[in-house]
Amino acid sequence: MTSIASSPEKSSTHEINCDVLIVGAGAGGLSAAVTAAYHGLNVVVVEKAPVCGGATSWSGGWMWAPRNPLARADGVNEDVQEPRTYLESQLDGNFRADKVDALLEAAPRMVGFFESKTSLQFTPGKWVADIHGKAPGAGTGHRSVAPKPINKRSFSKELQAKMRKQLYETSFLGMGIMAGPDLQKFLRASRGDIKGILHAAWRVSFHLWDLLTHRAGTQLVNGTALIGRLMKSADDLGVDIRVNAPARELIHDDGGRVVGATVDTPEGPVRIHAARGTVLATGGFPNDKARRIELFPHETGADHHTLAPASTEGDGLTLGERAGGHIDRSLASPVAWCPVSLVPYANGKTGVFPHIADRGKPGIIGVLRNGRRFVNEANGYHDYVLGMVNAVPEGEPVESWLIADHTFQRRYPLGMSKPRPIPTFLYVRNGYLTRGRTIEELARKCGIDPVGLATTVARFNVHAREGVDPDFERGETQFNRYSGDPTVTPNPSLAPIETGPFYAVKVVPGSFGTFMGLETDAEARVVDDGGKPIAGLYAVGTDQASVFGGHYPSGGINIGPAMTFGYVAGRHLAGATAYEDDDAALG
Image (cartoon, rainbow, N blue to C red):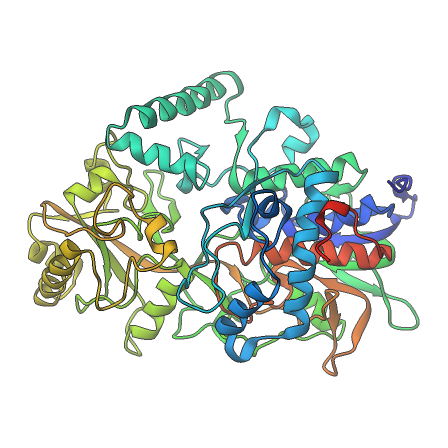
């Protein structure tokens, strides 16, 4: 391993010299930082927020990385043409061969590098299928990886103070539940399965002990585990991570090369000189209202509910544009949509809950104000909102309702509401759930057309009992079926809605982040209007225009490219030519 340079030197004139400056401490920025530092470069990371992680910390932490070493260890050896064919079928006119090929080339090496050389360890997504399973080249598993859980107590107190906490809405009393087998065991507990009950009891008891002894949970899963492991890897390699430090202006030399940035800190402005280059990784523009209004469709930009932290205000895009870069506006969608519901709290605050797991369970449908379905509810969250945006008539608010019955509500989560043994009245009393004795009463309370909803439910029930969905083909792909309940037959994604009382939760457009970002080349370098790289300037994560062109073909297509192009940028900055992990070489 290459020796690591000494830590950055800070002069009395508030000047810092380093090799690489990373602006933003999410998955993409930290990936670039760890990779560059591993190759011997002196790296400084500056983060606007008081904690690191960005939207990644509040995500499931999954990343799309086909042909990765964990898949091959399980005997899955895909030819690169298989995932490439799938992307060609999904991206339509937004397929950029140079960037797609760069992703498919580097993604397995990225996983191999972090798995073998750093504190970031993975678990394979054996069961994670691509969303549109009928498309050519669609994968049925092993194309994704997620971080292994880790206990926060293994980190230094300084690192712990810089870590973002688990998103409360997707936790149980602040305890994260890992997407996949962990979540499935919790759901089995609600059905009385003894193994599920024992698993849930063990997990909850461990968390309650943490609350008693540490006043917070210490077991990190999903996105918090990914960021925690990346931060530990960076710290092990001597990376200087500074929070409460927004970058305000890029520094250029006489030839126009970007050679660092001016950064605000609690001690005052600091000029950080980066000899090799500067990487923009500030998290896109989900909280930049002006850009949202300009770029989002159907007037959805004005009142938008994102899962990204408030600090994601388009800072990296602004810096990149000032340096001569531009936002790629050719993408199919400006944003990675997610259906969300608004959670009222007793203190007057409003939470934002992402509907990820509930839509695919048997016995639930999504309807518009006219009472009609508009989408395959069990497909990806991006598909759900995109269907809603396209189906709502111009001029009407973009909103829908998830409809379920009592059997569903006691067996599965319905948004923020939890299944048994958590009582239902808590969510009805605060207005989060709407309840009706009949479908028609529920419709009237929600402002839905009662006849339309009753007709829709009646039609859905007839076909659900037969295990088919002639309207939207729900349950016909592996992605749909895994999202369902394997104990339900003949289709794990379908069950009738017939046992009162009936429940509804209102759903509006939200997002995990934005797709439109700075146009870059295959090395993650920001390019000007003529396609020429801007010397010394890189963009990764959602500051970089999505390699998937504004489409959402599989889970993990935000974090996967963020990690991969962060890795690509770090290697390019270091001038690395040989791959770090020989076992990841694919030939």
